[in-house]
Amino acid sequence: MDEAGTKNGRILLVDDESAILRTFRYCLEDEGYEVATANSAAQAEAVLQQQVFDLCFLDLRLGDDNGLDVLAQMRIQAPWMRVVIVTAHSAVDTAVDAMQAGAMDYLVKPCTPDQLRLAASKQLEVRRLAARLEALEGEVRRPHDGLDSRSPSMMGVLETARQVAGTDANVLILGESGTGKGELARAIHRWSKRAKKECVTINCPSLTGELMESELFGHTRGAFTGANESTLGRVSQADGGTLFLDEIGDFPMSLQPKLLRFIQDKEYERIGDPVTRHANVRILAATNLDLAEMVKAGKFREDLFYRLNVITVNLPPLRERTEDILDLADRFLAHFVKEYGRPARAFSAEARDAMLKYHWPGNIRELRNVIERASIICPLESVQITHLGFGEAAPSNSPKIGAEMSLLELEKAHIAAVLANSETLDQAARTLGIDASTLYRKRKQLGL
Ligand SMILES: Nc1ncnc2c1ncn2[C@@H]1O[C@H](COP(=O)(O)OP(=O)(O)OP(=O)(O)O)[C@@H](O)[C@H]1O
Image 1 (cartoon, rainbow, N blue to C red):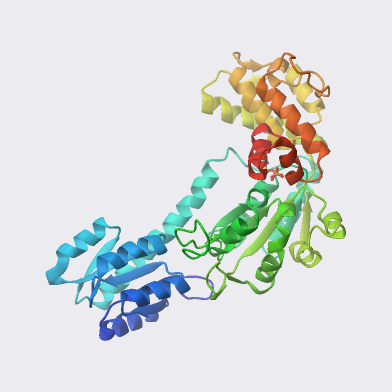
Image 2: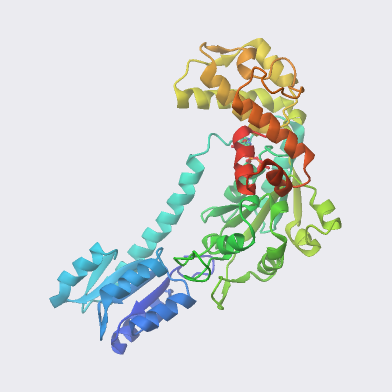
């Protein structure tokens, strides 16, 4: 049950007998589900173009239409939808064929209201669990993300974040790259009353205008070239939960009015589909850019900025929370030596001292990368300063072609320098001759 006391679940009934449609509909609506009906293959296809369903009860005998063809069409049009076949006792063999073709269960007619209710709740539970599993898998793939801190500035940030987590206010998380804005956003979701629903992340720089619109709001099949299947969109996935817009400063200007409308009215349309939909989503956004400056320069909409910026949280850079450096380093070391089966157990006194003195321009991400590398190359129980790769001082000299360094180090130094000399990610990507999404991934990989 959701907060309004209705059951979550949108069900489509497809049958050519109107009496069956009526009986099934009453029974399922009584349970609190949203129900729509179709009495032919063509009607089913049309309804599926217009609305999103979680579950379909499909009669395989549909007058002149072949139910197996309808099923195949459904697998393309709405691949997320669970399908239960409804069949007469004499045609159970066809139901078995249908299950091989992708249906999930079958009901034999005549069935009792209890059998129908049970089949519906079972399938909707499977759909809910599949979505939950996907979200949890994303969480498990990340190493330890405990946010506890000994640094006064970070403790203040965490206190504010915990307070706002309980409200539905939109939060803008600011901070240099790698300071943990993504981790904090996921924590705010976990601390909120939406925690049981999904926290869906969109990395804004990795998607351009139309792709971003389709990713956010979904599309119907054939809505544009390459749209071979309908998709629901991330906004629908985040319904009841949280949508985290990472690197919002790179959100396409052309799509900002639609995002603004969604934030204000909670309404949107899928590409290729005129039906206005509604989703109850809390928005968290993060950036390392100066959004206020971007607004002044006409590069970000002012009205959107104010909508996102109801509460601002500023994450301090790692060099300003030195109290946390060694705790984080210990945690990362424990994680990576276990993952790679390596001997290192601790840091030498010099290594600890060097980590405390280092400037950490890439913040926690850089610390994590440094420790991951050290855990692999260190053959001893104690990690030495040389294993950390940054020597006694921050690397400041430009690399020389032909110098003793690996291609990876050269690539990292070159990308860092181009980024520092470019105003936007797009400009840097053009200079480097790669697309913005590749640059975005490389930055993360290299800890820049
Ligand atoms: N408190 C923490 N404990 C452990 N790991 C952390 C913590 N904070 C951040 N990290 C790790 O540091 C890396 C960078 O974190 P995150 O992606 O959240 O930073 P960010 O500020 O969003 O970076 P960007 O601006 O580049 O997107 C990630 O690998 C994350 O798992």
